[in-house]
Length: 333
Image (cartoon, rainbow, N blue to C red; front, side, top):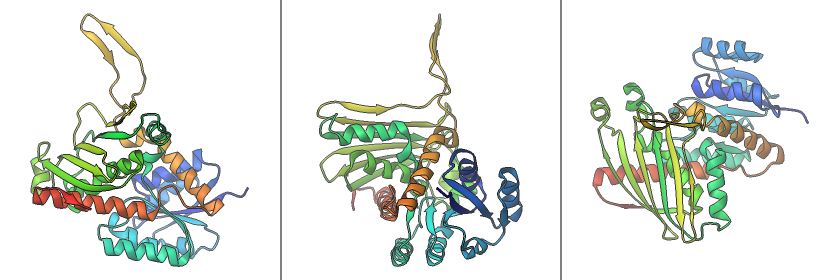
């Protein structure tokens, strides 16, 4: 079968990651062009990976009739605009989260996707992590009975730069949005109420920028299950990513990934390796699997596993959490 021809818009950290994965790990796809407003970045990635075309203007990608799909890996404020333009160009689309910070912009983008009958998959890569996917499978098949309690721990090893914090939309949009999507994914039900509390405990500059760096968010699902998400911008021991679903018949849990599973003991106690330090390492397999799923959806003309509607719902929940934090009370969705 002929490989899916892909153009990538954005040659930063995530765009170059997808370019490398497709080129080296995914034979079903072929990156034929990459674009970035910093043309040197596009040329650097293209040169390293043997991508034939590198542009400053992304419209060369949209105008190329031979390109089947585009990956949108640019800053959040450009996502909705690029989704609309790519759908008008009849390109299937993979877009990193979030679609936009404004719900009207999201609705406009999703409407254009529907009008043009193209596929849109949102980059909630954690759904494709084998451990998290197995927890979801155990919940879905009833192995733990009716789900009662969900716990998600998501802590970064280091806070982002302050300049990024100022334009990120806040911790709930930038960071916890992954956990809101994971909560829906694991329980298999919609969230009907959120209550968020937060503090500035890591870096005072984050507080000065109008954000928080430590948060606890409680969730209530329509089926009555309860959830709690804890977030921190700084875990000194590494990238802390754990989930647990407790139910009437048992519990399913996914722990952190480490470079090795060796445990050794001495007179001071038992010791193990720290968790993998950053998301690019922790979710390496998930990033590959999500792209494979997108290509399969395009090939088979079927609904992708993470839809534009999923992307919108996560933003709605994040906005509700932000409002809850400001008002100091639960917010119904």
